[in-house]
Image (cartoon, rainbow, N blue to C red; front, side, top):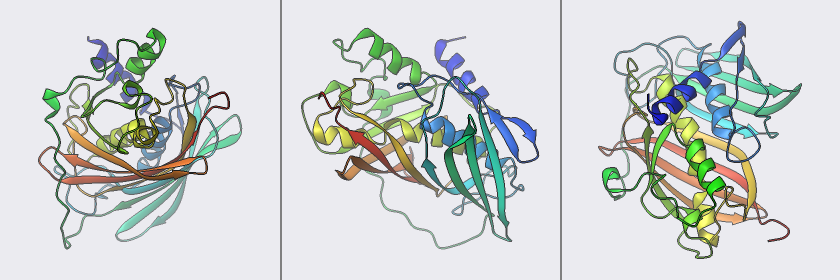
Length: 307
């Protein structure tokens, strides 16, 4: 088995939560680029926990999910409250806020060492017909023409930094349309970034739009969204150490079914930063031009005191 497929299997195992009680789940953790639990992991696991309590037949509001089956979210809103401990399990408690005729709402609190570290509100919707339109997909180079994340690493990047970057993203085939922040340190540019991504292997037996695809997109969405903030200031990011920061809040809207194991374009920009915070907003597109997801995130972005 290749390293990439092993990493994907490890990620899928991470999303297989243990059910402790009817609405209480436990998840493992894994090391991240920084000494805390990766925010995308907590968000994805919390969404898995919420989905385990939702009736079948709740699907993205803009279209039916081929094959039917289990639920998937149409939106989520989350707050990162405390840094997570990667050496300890995380307990997820689900509150069944509402089960309506069209919408189901769940609230999830993630707890470690007796303290909440993360809060998620997620909404699920039964499919229904409705008005439909979307803006046009932006231009982007074909993903096959771009170097892999490992190939794009600068040669002068410290070996330990390069190893952490490769390990943290091994489960995902991630390809930058332009140089990533750590490759252009000291050279500010437009606060925009495009990344193609897909899982490093196929997800057999999973229909487009299933909860697993949604959770995997949630996981990946926290990897690069604040890159555009860094680009505006010529900063390399968390791995390089010329900024410190963390996700504060995160929101996603799932418009149309998609597959996380097929190429998705993550078109990102930062409209503003200030007060020690940076804002990122993005759209995720399928390769054939369908708008699948909208994402907004704010994070702490601070220059180290000695920087």
